Amino acid sequence: MMGTYDQGSDSFTDTNDISQRQDGRLTPFGQRMLQHFEFDPGYRNLNHGSFGASPREIRNKMRQYQNLAEAKPDQFIRYEVPDILNESREAVAKLLNAPTDTVVFVSNATIGVNTILRNIVWNDDCKDEILSFNTIYGACGKTIDYIVDSGLGRVSSREILITYPLEDDEVITALKDAISKSKSDGKRARICVFDTVSSLPAVRLPFEEITKVCREEGILSLVDGAQGLGMIDIDLEALDPDFFVSNCHKWLHVPRSSAVLYVPLRNQALISSSLPTSHGYVSKARERFNPLPKQHKSVFVNNFQFVGTLDTSPYLCVKDAITWREQVLGGEARILEYIHTLAREGGKKAAQVLGTEVLNNKSGSMARCATTNVALPLEPKEAANIAQWMEEKMVSDYNTFIPVFRHNSRLWARISAQVYLDIEDFEWAGKILLELCERVKRGEAKNV
Image 1 (spheres, helix red, strand yellow):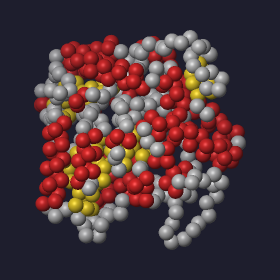
Image 2 (cartoon, one colour):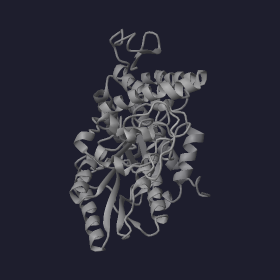
Image 3 (cartoon, rainbow, N blue to C red):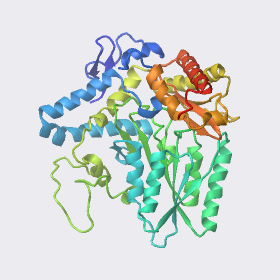
Image 4 (cartoon, rainbow, N blue to C red):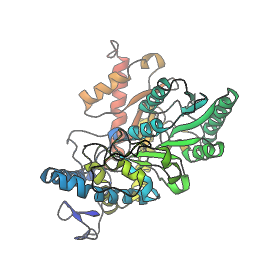
């Protein structure tokens, strides 16, 4: 049952009871939006991109689902959860413009990437390769390492080196060069793993064109949209990837932890098991009893409907979060316009305070997202090995956190825009980063 937020009663209610906000007004974006979230009053959440944040109304809804599971465990888990899961799948499929029976839920994007890569059957001729960019998320890069290490020589990996700033066509050229090199080395590029928006640096990749190149070359495309759904427009019908995964608990305001995994009908036979394998698995050797009464007609969906006993309440909240974003925030277009503009203008403001610049290309395509990368005013020698010190001091001394990382011989800070932030937050971020850099120059981090 879809729900909506009633600002008059400060509670989450069903759409059967209220079809629209009674006052007809939207809460302005910026610091006034903090009333909907449960941050400590003294904490500034400038790192939405790592763990996300869910509004109080949706967290209350999650607790309602948890209470139902505690009140009548078998009734709720066996008979009610499958139907609510289907409603959430329908809601997120509509948002992604994908058929409902092509999407399932997993706990996070890393699990989604693992699920795909661990299901691929590698050829015995030992020619298969996994392609990825050097900016791949660390856990996914290590997943590729594990697949190669445990693959008995049947699969290898090839990393595509890119250094920003780059224009989109330069990224595509690097991809095509890697594919050509794979062929000339007698290898077969089997699957390519790439981001919508990478983590560090936080850069929007030309993932639409990368997907197209993979399709033309007969390479499976695995799109890691961990920073995707709720942050940029995603149209899976138009994109047509072979696999796609995106966190819901980051930019879609769903409670932790939840992600959507998309596998088109043409590829569902490749994904024989969930991770871990559970009651939905269909063996080729024998038939086993499935004790769950409500099984889905789709073998793919059924595989992921019950993956051991775990708290699926965040999955159930996906439909509620989508409705909340529509009713309280004014819908996806309004949200994206605000957070993209704030990231762009906020990044400029922080860079102005620091006397540096934002990481971007001439076309601006790299920065068409809700995160910004701001250079820190430190010389390479000064910046050596102090990122962790700066991050720890942000937590202990400034009550915030901003990821600090090295790229192209410079130190950068990644700041996330969100509906509960405004330009003043980015100016403040610039000031504390400048103060930390001054502390580094005074030698406070010399023992790191």
